[in-house]
Length: 478
Image 1 (cartoon, rainbow, N blue to C red):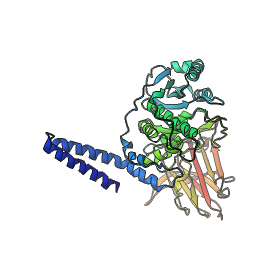
Image 2 (cartoon, rainbow, N blue to C red):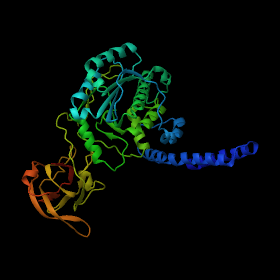
Image 3 (cartoon, helix red, strand yellow):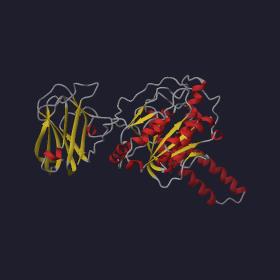
Image 4 (cartoon, rainbow, N blue to C red):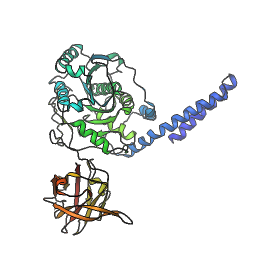
């Protein structure tokens, strides 16, 4: 119906222009050019509209209710230009080159506690010297209180002067005159007026931050100003990005909390900035992100475990209220993303619904689920190229289904791949060991196996009555 109305609108415009042409010197060529421009907008908009339709089909707790905004969804694909804001540089040196990752922080004065300096410290301390060369940190001091900003700038420059000089740390401020109306906004979700103002301004704070960071790096990750980082988080992020090469994604999540650890392509930042401005008074920013992802046709959340970032603040930036939220998937020291080289997966077990074999090999939070396996059933990984393996780890069962583990099984490695009619298989296998309590883990595999490995096989050694979840298969290469 929308497409019909849009086309009808186009033809009405053309009809008016024909009348105008009779009364003026506008040529038919001009009409044709304008028609083509409208058609171009229509074609570009269709991509986002399909995402919008998909989003509507999803069950969502938080809806964009304002009818006056619904029609502007179609313009999202055209929001590629920068927002016209003149920033104040509070502490910065000119960027010497484009980095791999920009880390964005927006901060305002809190009634209780201040965690910004600790957050910046964690970012730099948890990064190696080589990693520091590939990151830049942009801090948006978004409070309108100039005295507070002056104090914060002084503290930041004293503690992190060498990072500012090296171009790794930039502190900015978007002046108040660029902000839209923040008083008398409509009250959604039964929020009090001051809460609506707070979350609406926060959306604009983030929009201006995103707008500034659009051309500073290849990728962008948003953190809040009260976050602790995992060791070598950049290396972990790079591994994940490499593993997803060739696949489409809009947002990757490295924390399950709020607006923490959300990763974007930098080329999407202008659209996201415009989107937050467009709906700044509708809902909190983390809810808006779900809609943005859906509109750009990423239906499902892509979140990685363990989490790379942890919320450390005790007091919220809103009224200083208590905020004890913690990400129980966070690991500060032991985080090590596996390499999981390209491979094909096969099983003769009875797969339940869409919990197919490939989900056990993914770094995303998903798993394989099969009906009760029998003696001799197998789950096989066949690598595209033979590899040297440093470490193997296989985990079965989940927290809520602790009995759906592999009760009796072994893990084998194989070589000598042969091509059959419907698949490739290894001819010979060597047993590495048995599963214990549903898990298998072995290090220094390359010192125990005298050949390059083509296949890994999980072998069921005894029939069980319980279903089987293979939660994760992790491979580290040497």
